[in-house]
Length: 272
Image 1 (cartoon, one colour):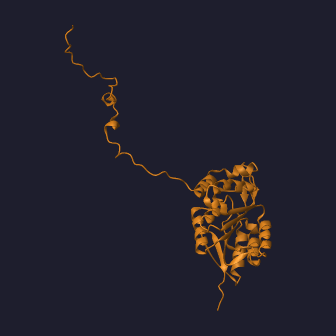
Image 2 (cartoon, one colour; image 1 turned 45 degrees about the vertical axis):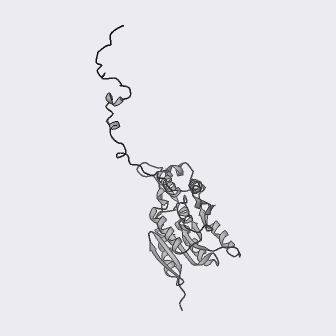
Image 3 (spheres, one colour; image 1 turned 135 degrees about the vertical axis):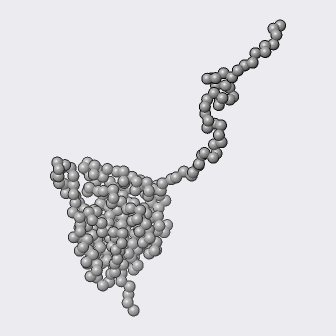
């Protein structure tokens, strides 16, 4: 029988050493406690409104117009900003609005913001000319529980508004507490006048807001400049804005103020 060996085994370098891989691999992080190095955070989920506004910013609206997808050359900045969204929510909440009318909706960011703050049985009625932008925004509105409060009429705003005016004579019609006019500048005076001249269309405490942003909602005109015939420009709408502002200031039955690019109009309080 062979005698027991007295050879001393030395650690082998360059190879994995069984249950102690750190003896051969310089994985220093395995030798240190991990808890102090890892910071966990709750998953962040964007709201449907935030997703919609991001999608609008990422979309190529000039290309959509060039390819005939949209009726006018729209711009991402037409979508309601965070400041505008906050203003709409404040106006709706402070006025206890239940029924809201939006004339010119674009992709519906403002409509969704309003729908989120009105009561569960409230309604946002939107009038929008372009079916492309309605479909674009609708898929985000459907992600929100408030999306079911939004009803959109696609087509010319005046035609839809006249239909609502005819309905206002009925006993079941519920007047609008808040109206946002954010459409073409050529038509905003007519929209404004029809709202205030139609009995029953607006509630006694109604607030009407008119967007006064230049260039917004204007039909484009193709022009050639520096060899780029695919570019477009629009009338600013300044003349129409000035005309509406003067007309409102001349009316004794209305009072108005401006902030955040909006002309906000209410009825003058009855004098004792």
